[in-house]
Amino acid sequence: MLQLFAADVPELPFPAGKDVLQLLWCPFDHEAGYVPRPELFWQDGSMRGPVLSAPPRPEGAREEYLPDPCVLHPERVVEYPNWDLPEELADELEERFEELEDGTEWSYWAHLSVAPGIKVGGYPSWTQEPFWPSCTRCGRRMDHLLTVKSAEFDGESWKAWLPIEDAPASGTVLDLPYEERRRIQRAPGVMLGDMGGIYLFVCPQCPGLPYAYHSDCS
Image 1: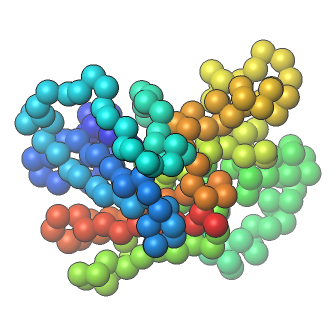
Image 2 (image 1 turned 180 degrees about the vertical axis):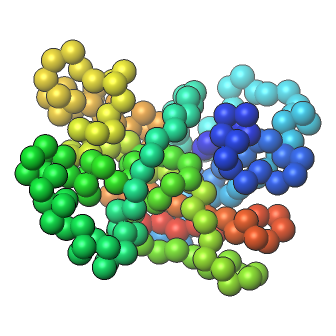
C-alpha cells in the first residue's frame, strides 16, 4: 500500500538499523471496521532482494482496496488540530475564527487546520469522532504515524489542499468532468467505506514500536 524511506521522511521514528517503512494490508473486509487489515514492517533497505517489475494482484479482492501504482513525493506542511483542538481553546478562539472567515472566506476548520488525504505524522484528519488508542504494553496514548484516506480533499477542503500541479487552467476542480476530478481527488484509486480512512498509531516508548490501527469508514 505504501513505502517510505528514512531519507525522505527522517522525522519518522525508524528503529535502529531500519530505513524503510512498508505498509501492507490484506485487501479483504475484516471485522474490525470491515476494511482491509493493515500490517507495518520496518526494513533494512540494504538487505532488499530483487524487485518484481509487476507485483501480482490478489485474486478476488475488491478493486477499491488495491491501490494504483504511483510514486510519492513527500511534501512538508504545517497543520493544526481540528477535532483534536481542546474544547475550551476552540471556544476561546471561536470569535477570531468567525472574523477570519468573514474577512477572507477561509475557514479554520475546513482550510487551515488538518491536511486531508494520505499523510504521515501530524494530526489525524478524522472522518468521525477521534479515537486515540493506548499502547497495550505501557498504557500510554499512542502517536499518530500515518493515515490512508479515500480522497485527498473534499468539496470544501480543495480550496486549500488541492496541489497546484492539479489545479485546472480555468474554473475550479469541481467544474471538471467526474472522471478527471476523480483521478485527481483519488489518485491511488482507493475507496474505504463511505469516503473514510484508516489511521495507524505507534508507541515510541516501547521496544519494537508496537502499533495499532483504527478505521472510520462507515
